[in-house]
Structure formats: structure tokens, C-alpha cells
Amino acid sequence: MPYRIVQPWGVRVGEWTLIDERATALEAFAAIDAVSERTMRTGAPSDPIELIVVDETGARVAWPGAQ
Image (cartoon, rainbow, N blue to C red; front, side, top):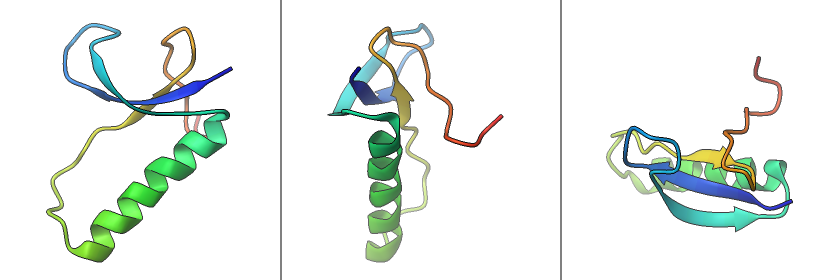
């Protein structure tokens, strides 16, 4: 089951830009963490970039351990 990292741009489900696709949810969240670490290290602006992980049906996947 592929997991997609997407950046939402609209108000409806499915209104997003595909950023990346990973084999597991853990790999997808690790990729988001890597982007976060890189922006902090390079001094990029702290404006938030919303990235979420969705499964093959487009349903949002919760961060591991989140309730």
C-alpha cells in the first residue's frame, strides 16, 4: 500500500499537491521529518508548510503514536 506525502491547497478532500510517495507510513513520516530538519538547519523561514500523509484511498494517516 503506497503512502503519499501531500500538501493541501483547498478545502475539500483530495485538493492537494502530491509531494512524494513511500512504501510505508513510517517512511513517509521520516521524509517529512527530514524536510523539517533541513529547513531548520539551513535557516529557512519558519512559516509553516503543511504536509500530511494519506493512504491509497486518500484518507489521512495519523502520526505514529498520536491519538
